[in-house]
Image (cartoon, rainbow, N blue to C red; front, side):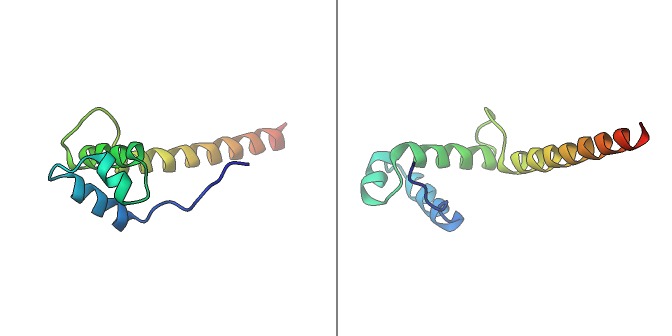
Length: 88
């Protein structure tokens, strides 16, 4: 069974991104702190998207809206299915 852990707190991610901004490499940060370089690099890319520095993906706000709309869509389909069965 794969090992899982709780997600890192937002404050911790923000601190790692702030340390990487002045030029520290993700490998140095990975050696000093726990997250691997790939994870840190992903956090930096997402922070750039959220800050408007990149436009190659969705922002965190857009991702949350998509999640909410998909959940709502799933619920509406379920309700429609139930009503169709009741009408038949």
